[in-house]
Length: 438
Image (cartoon, rainbow, N blue to C red):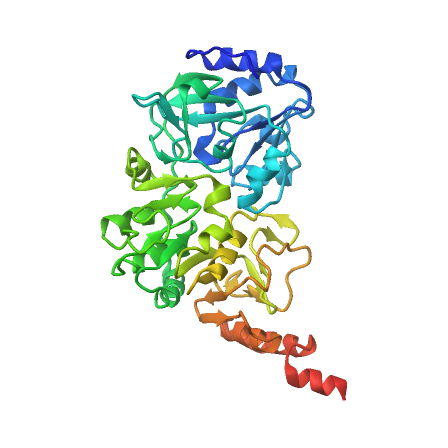
């Protein structure tokens, strides 16, 4: 147990006392995105020279820091479980570590590291003495009551509901701060994004439960769902487009099997409008990621629809969603979790979306094989439907020849002849295999 002040203290006092008790090789956990306690992390970096081999574990860091770039190597180091625009270049330059994992499994892997403490941002306590972890629950919530929490109570952090709440008596120490959350403006969809979205929306029935990722295509999908009825939301990420669907009446969750009438997520990231929407709103439940992203939980919903983006798909149906060749771009996140969950759902559908080309049309994103060194995020047996601006390729239950034909049909027309020749050379077309065997 950590010996820290029981009443509010300054961030520096909390970190000074924590640092004095940190053993060599200690692991600390910091929540995803805006769950990062900014002032506490400032003070932690200031004491880096007094530490030895301490590692901070976090997904999707939103604020740049020297320790992310290896400034205190051997003292204080960062382990990313999902790269952001901040940590991507830091990892490429060798400044921090990266641990690949499905989002649903991150709490389990972190628990194996026996973290000394969780450092987290939180909302002010309510009249009953309960803090909430604000716009997140993620992999931090499972440690409530099991690992000491040191909280940075931010007056601008929304108070939310779910299993992300903890009582003042269960907090090792806390301080008070006041600063705005990082906002991520909603991406405006382009013409191609809207075409892709239209292919998907036509297949989403009223009463479906949806999971939307972040980006232009999910935003476009949400824009076309305004006339749908009784939609539910069960998504690792809650973003601005969902607010529009709630306020427009398309989302009410009345046909959900679990948490009927509620939106379920594990973190929120977007504009101040989104943060204001979740503040004090018990329509939204923030649950731990090992619950939200569990494919078995997802599969309990009927007509579950998962929509996620990828970077490249090969003719077998393998999706590389986190690397550009050998270069890491992000991480596995929850894509495979939700793709598997959609498989378990009665009437479920898993959509993987991408534009057909890149490089001004010169490079097809549907390829005979994945680029050398590319990492498979969602395997061929799990991928259900692949969508480009040229249509939908349905893969599950199909032969290799049928898969290749379906994917070539949604590739850019200028690349289809080349892809067909490559498929024949690889023996993926039945006729070419017959000729080879003769």
